[in-house]
Length: 441
Image 1: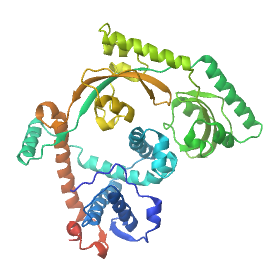
Image 2 (image 1 turned 90 degrees about the vertical axis):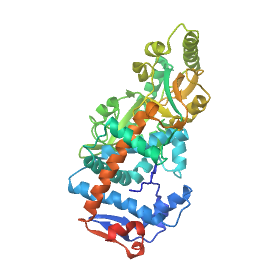
Image 3 (image 1 turned 60 degrees about the vertical axis):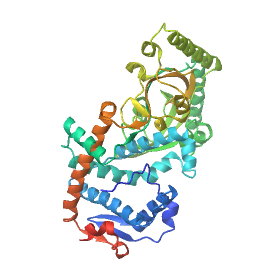
Image 4 (image 1 turned 45 degrees about the vertical axis):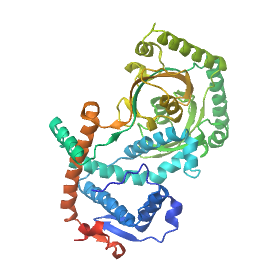
């Protein structure tokens, strides 16, 4: 099966609105619209894809694979929840945020749309992708490969001159210091939110105040509205308060890892609630920033002078959860301890490129997951330069390739069987596509 790997399917409403739409393909109850094809076609051209001759035919074939999987997933009663889709959207957006450097940069990339609007635009697209993946997982749930099969697979790659090039990978550990926020600053923020709460209780609109004062810039654009959420979508402290409120009731001040909030439930819909809030983030004093930086510099000097092991120092002094793992940073995209260089945040990527195995960085300033200025030193525990794959150093990667190949063969066989027992319609405009001949037979 020919595969197209796309980080996002960026089909804008603008593109689709310019196209006179009609159904091009129908598979069971699933349909493919002309605008769907044209949107992906334009996206490929924007990405520099040069072979236009059969591109639309290939796009249709790829879509037909997914629609066939979705059709039979529904027959088999497989489901994808809204929570699943939202988590997948976050998993896709977060690397893009890291790559571009900020949420605002991502919003600018999407022509000024907020993250909430971006997620809404692509919700159905990702729900369908997840459903097709669930079907593939069901088809391949019993597939495994033995070490001997991995070796034979690698031998076939070598015979056909297809051994992959492994990009540079690094294994990193870190020690993080998060500057403390003073009690006085926390008290100041609490008092300000209490004053906002009093103003709302005296008749002012929380949404208006959120748009003017909230530090949650994304929701502030929508008068503080977060949108409908279910249990499990929010951090526990925020969620427990949100689900205890009556409609129109304004909460007391709530502290979370992101700062301090007051919130209001706008609407209930089954087990979901629509809420809006005001977030204020306490500011760290410059003296606290300086103290954290100097403390980390002292730890670095102790490590460089061999009086402390990096791993010991990480366990004892780091403010990051990675301290529990001796400072080792886990790649969030695959759960391994290795990162390809382009998977690193831009600021860290620049540093790591210049470092060798065993090197320890200078003290680096960064913004942590909670949006707070923090400091870290990073050690390159291991660095594997770009090379042709081999069984000794890359067995796990070759194992994954071998397993994926075996699963793909099984999915191909499944599709051959299912397409012959499923209603399929293809518009005459594309009936001459050679890649679609087996679907028309």
